[in-house]
Image 1 (cartoon, rainbow, N blue to C red):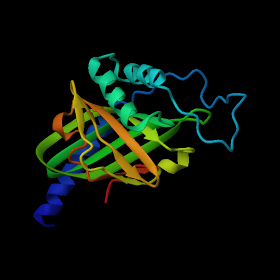
Image 2 (cartoon, one colour):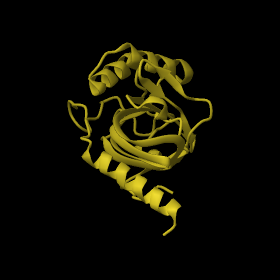
Image 3 (cartoon, rainbow, N blue to C red):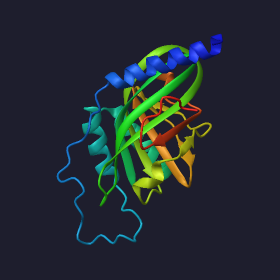
Image 4 (cartoon, one colour):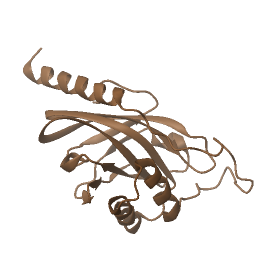
Length: 205
């Protein structure tokens, strides 16, 4: 095994250990999978308002800080109202070349919450590992199965405010806006892509 493979394997083990040890914080649900009487199965997904997202994100992060509200304000100004969001945790490890693994729950109105995993390589100058919470807004998603694809990062989309990092990913007609806390400049700036899946995959390539 050459040195590059050893480095990647070490980063994978570090990231997997971090995400394995991070507890997934899920929001309380009034009634999982509850249907609204006026819902039409053939219609486009119902969006979440800014007030709803701020409340859910603040409860998820355990904070109503200026950073969370400012990041959400920025994304809403760019993208409008999302039709879904993922609340989860992720771990990442980097030794020049790094890996990122995460697990969360996808929420959409009139759909049952579903578990989602993601994994992907990162390229950057930093070293070490970290675990963080991630709240991802999803645009143009009409059904949960649309999330299971690979989403590359969008160049120039990095935005930081008060310790909160946001970047955009796009693919398959969807736009994702992961909001991360406490991870510094590595909050998406180094991520080449993330692959969202039904099950966790050790190899992200």
